[in-house]
Amino acid sequence: MAAVLHTSGTDRCLPFQTLPISLRQRSTAAESFCHKKFFEMVGLKKKSQEDVKKVFHILDKDRSGFIEEDELKFVLKGFTPNGRDLSDKETKTLLAAGDKDGDGKIGIDAYVCWVQKGN
Image (cartoon, rainbow, N blue to C red; front, side):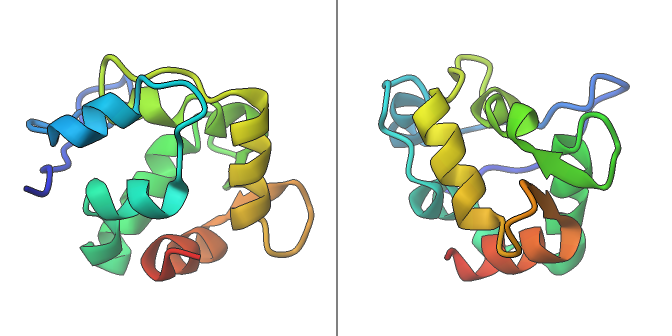
């Protein structure tokens, strides 16, 4: 079952009305994060470019136009209240997967391509 994305107020989080049990379990188990599975499970791979860009802007907490390492660390908490922080290793792996130009951050175009292709 795909979760339904909606934003709430000024807290800029991504609460989902329903999440599959497997996602809830993956978001709390240490060293279990796989971005490919995650994008698929939360339904991002099937979202329109416009919806994926909305998610980008919510994850871009400092509104810099990029998602940096410190913002990626907390990505699971944006999708489920019981989400854990990613470990440093998981965060660096996630950043390396999405940072195609090696500048240490993920821009919106790279994010959309990354999420929709699942690379």
